[in-house]
Length: 228
Image 1: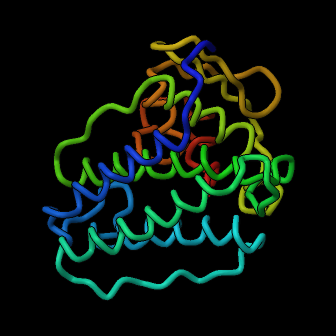
Image 2 (image 1 turned 180 degrees about the horizontal axis):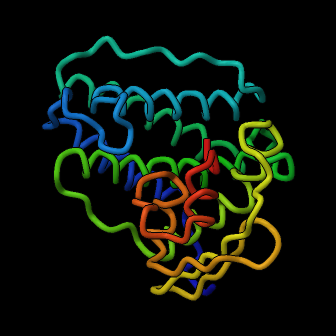
């Protein structure tokens, strides 16, 4: 698929800025629709903690960190807590060459550059979560959404299977994007086709879209622990 050469650091900076701006005026008690055990406060704590953890993975070369939970209860204070962690992550990723060794989720890519892309997708999905919780979800850029689909298929789902968090798929699902030139298959055998916009396919993989209208075989695969 043809798309612009991504400047992952610029994309990450833009999305973390958007997230922080949204938090400043957010109702921290609002529920997060697709994570019913979370409030907006929980969502912010999660993403800030993920940024802290990813920065540690680059600097220390291991995943052994339990991020601190925020004590802030005011939305503006919480936004600043989040922005500090996002800024630290960006500083680490900017100072560290993309080919420098780092602990990552991908055993075939143990470089700091992995985290540039991974954190863009992590943040983009949680920006959508936050906007959706606040009643104003905006579309994810199609090429970025499709790159997120490829990340799940190539990296995250195989890792889920490798770690025993998901069973190898009994069926195959072919995902075809309607707004970009994208076509990829999960599983083996004669696939069930799911055709939709790249963003919808990405949200299906992250359990943020309705599967009830899909073929039952596709619904079963996409409802499983395809992603962490």
